[in-house]
Length: 533
Image 1 (cartoon, rainbow, N blue to C red):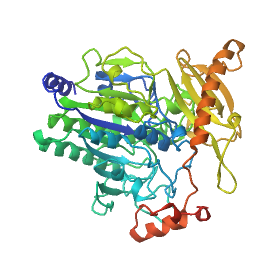
Image 2 (image 1 turned 90 degrees about the horizontal axis):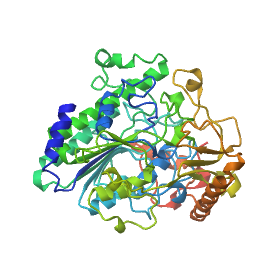
Image 3 (image 1 turned 90 degrees about the vertical axis):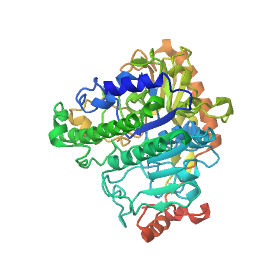
Image 4 (image 1 turned 45 degrees about the horizontal axis):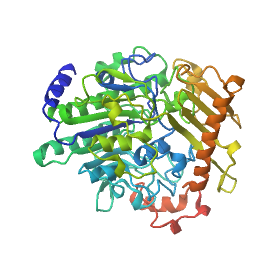
């Protein structure tokens, strides 16, 4: 790895005239305690990614949304999900049969990158809408796509997970811009991490083969890993004789099963980077790695010592690993850390600027801020606040979404060093080697109402001291609550795109092909009377 970095850095000294290639790797449910030397029990599981992070720029205060669909919507649109119709965030809110998606009124990141002359490809998880063809990746700016559309599937046969009561469908589609989608009948059924890596390496090889005529590549590699179900990885990515020693620090079976998925991911990322190096593209490439949200302890991932996990506004749900590795980073930035606030929405303007774009050309109402200068060494602070969550809606007994009043709205935001959380159910700090971690059910609680919290998350990142009722912090509480209220007004005005699932309609269409596909040509094709039981 050291030799790889040195060679690429040397080449970068003379090969910086053309627009850089950008490979963005989004992992799924990778927790704060799952990557790097500081992991309490899996420091050896991510040897390669840890080495990359140590040679790049580690973004230590990287924040995202607390679950998959809102995080991906934020990444692709540069907008806070609560303000773009995608903020109704609870366990199971986005299903395979959901007849909604990220609004077509928004131009997405791949479309912006195409306007700069990039070839754009997505491999892996889409998860922001598929009920009509117009919502699929190649209709939103990607030139090519190999994607599963839902939140989870089986790793080896790509069928929906968990199994539907009245059918089993394959969740994998191929897409090419300007053409109708294709079911992936010709795709070999190999472990998905291997499949997605192979496809990503093909995109890299195609770019290299095109030589001087190649467009710069924007590759969005959205792995299924390390999401459940933790099925045995392929021998090509996890070999017990070669990799088994990397499990030596953990003893719980649920954590070991997760660790095998993680080791396979680490080995896959190594293959992708080796392809960039062998094709001599690494010298002109930015590689970004980021998790979509915090891990779910009962699923094997872990966020310790941060509090909570997936679906929580506590740090364990929204503060996750992210780093940038590139020979194009200035020497003073390599091997360093940034503790500046960075949010998932920032990637749209940041990557656009990274590709040579003028961010003044972007839509004026995006929420992300351009952090490219900061990544390259500027000490200018680009962001001082983040809207972490805004869920202003509730589903009534008839399956109709109602807007809550502000006092009952769930929300969270950071301003400076302080974080305000409204109506959040309490969560523990889950050490991985404990029964409480194994029994934790993310997004499910016996409590019916939450509480309010104020933390100085810079000095108290583990959220041990709630300052909300401390009179000396009353002004801070009032300020953050007032800002949250302003966001609430915008969210209530914008509304939510959420709709009740459409089961018989979608299942009838899927039964014809055996695949999860678009199942409507207009909103008239779906009905609230068709909801899944």
